Image (cartoon, rainbow, N blue to C red; front, side, top):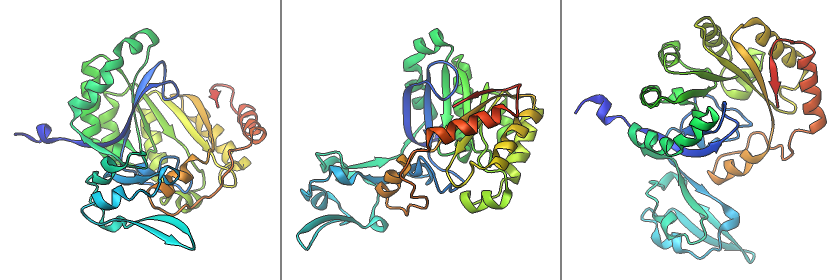
Length: 310
């Protein structure tokens, strides 16, 4: 059996009928694993490249079925001052899923599953009729698709063999050789541009942006179709300097045809708690509409050639 036949990848969601991840109606395949560690991450369950146990606290009725089912004794229902709590020893968890099966309330689930490429494409092709009538296709997102480069490339090749329009959403922090090889099978790159200043980028994402900008430059030189995706995070990157950099980047590269502004939402906070990791950006409020509109209008005043969508 050759290497390609053994190839599998870890996916945490296959979302049908997506309308915000490229043109038309699409299916978005969410990869596990990411080289960055953004403090505001909207999908913290995607950071690890392997399955994780997800716990939704408000669904738990403290029935103790998970305690009895778990072979690793990871779960404990404790009482203190008349208040029940559900504690999980994640270091002992083998992600076997026994507790999830035992939970009648859906409070426990394994986020992430290993697939072979053909199984993913079979799921994607269930909506082929919608792609054909809307000029849609498949989008590979995450996490970071290039965290699993061989698996991504195989999915791209299979997608093109089926005649699908392909898109990749990427943070850009990867080896250029991976991106260059994937570009031959990719119709559209949704390229994240998070923070302009390299040191601030490192502070808030765990890595500076030099490699990211180098890859963006090379991708544009290759002639790839690019949409620049820019999260707007209050107190981090809504300042005028960064907004000016967004416009400057968009104006500089001829193949960036559109800017997508993505206002902050706090949904990642509950997800972080659900997988047992510390919340590093505990802003519970959505980005104010007035501030978001102000950012949009300021960028519009600096670039005339690009469509801007929020």
